[in-house]
Image 1 (cartoon, one colour):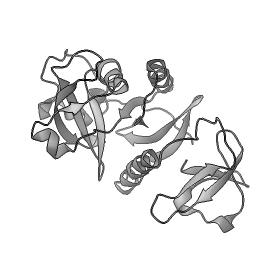
Image 2: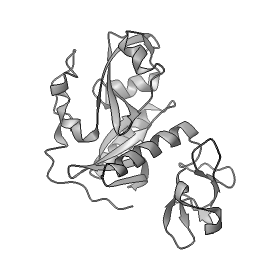
Image 3: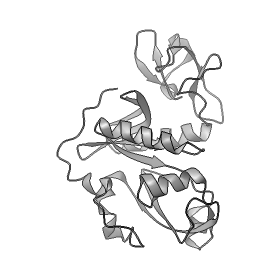
Length: 238
């Protein structure tokens, strides 16, 4: 995890903290957290002992991706929160775009379909749009050359049931790739062709102008097309 609470109940980031700052605890379960600053990996906190806490057990790659998203959008001038509590759950990153909050969930490993749905419904109930971000097993250069890609079952669930025939991948510098799987059999481990486009969250309402979602996709009023025109915006407290 990238955040912890201090003895005076402040939320702090690992890369901004020092071991001399005092004791840290997990913001979710309240158990002791240890600050780690490895030379070749991202600064992070770890539970002092084995824990079933929902904030434990993520990979370093997972932590690095969500930190890059947080850092890039902070530098772009957006309101952004990391490991943000929404109702009874936390999202990896929350970014405010055009008066709307987007809850970003980084998902690199298998997850039950029911958990995908439960997290999405939780965030939606609290006024957040939910964006699941995964990672390709091929580089975008390979994909553009037509190299086929092995899709995993949980990615199929996100593609088919959560994001209406798309996957999202973070590319750095605030850019995501939107990926559409074409010509595949439902929920198998075959290799599929992919088309993609890059965008920033502030461009979310421009998908159709970028010729994405033009292949066998129903014409639906998708959440990312409503972002720029949303006049409300959810309340957000860290």
